[in-house]
Amino acid sequence: MDPKLLTEDGWKAIALKFKVKDKDLQRALSVYETIDEDEPDDQLKELATITRLATNLKRDKEIAASPPVVKYLTDLLSAVQAEQREIAKTKAVAAKIAAVTQKKADAEAKQRGKEDDEEDEEDEEEEEEEEGDYHVKLVAAFQKLKGAKDAAYQFIICDAKPHSAVMLAKKINAKHKDELSKVAGGSKRFLHVGTVRFENGKYNFAMEKPVTGLARKLQDSIKHFTGKKLPILVGNETAEDDEGAAAPAEAAAPPKLPRPDLATAPEVWQGTRGLLEKNINALKRAIQAQSGDEQPEFLAEIKSDLEQLNRIVAKLDGRLADSLSKAKGIKDPAGRKAELQNSKAILAGYIQYVKSEPLIDLIDTNPFGVKTNLKPALIGSLTNIAQAIG
Image (cartoon, rainbow, N blue to C red):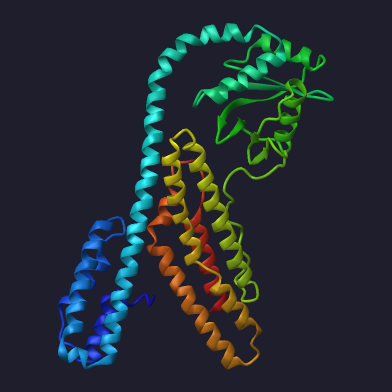
């Protein structure tokens, strides 16, 4: 779609060139350009006005005798229909995410309402923690974390060979340290104090300075003492419950871009698209994980709506990288210049889309704890490529 179609200047140029007497359509396009993207209902209302005015102009006998004007109006109406569909899709996805967010907020409010009762039960739970064998108490602690939403325990690790040991409790005290030391063969090397929660399908061990490799080390320790291979998260590393492979748990941060260079520009854009797809998929998984206790019908509906996020990747396709690669391989200066003009046109379309797509901002401000960083990554990459093209 030509980005100038839904602008006052685009129509004004055509009207002047072919001496079309019109002020209403020009005014409607001007109004549409001033409407904020956060007001989709106003956008749709003005688009309906534009449709009516453009359709009436096409029916005018004088205009019907001017093929270039008729073609412009036809393209304008097609652009309006495309814009209406995009706005409707964005509204639908926003509504669904808002519904999930509201459900999450309601659940958190309900949980806060139970906190007073839970505080009264803490003393009893701490007494229960003191009873039983180490491995039995460890399994029970993990089960409680998984079963109680937003529950958190303190943890402490005793470093030892061949297996370190970890203790979980509402509050770690001297008695816990004594028991942990005995389990660890008398070691007194206590380290890595922090809190652990069950979040997004993993036991998240949070500490001020996460230690590389600790996720796998904890998983091995827990399996040794309990026979259970649990999914563990420490910082940005995970040890999965199936293959135990370490992998980043959060959405990837935008990479540091190289100096603007036409030779590397295609790879920069392909890398950005890969980051885009990866972080959108990370958000999908987070939403699905936090909606896991909903009814099957609701989950199916959420899954369908989440597929709408794929349209961002589809819009920001591989055409730019293909055009830049083609230009790079052209020896003839005139041919190379012509292909770079094509690259610039594609780039301009991408930039306008990134600026006008409200779904990108909606994703970046999601309440599900996933730092997608889509907009800064896209703007940084497109600016880098624009500088490379010159």
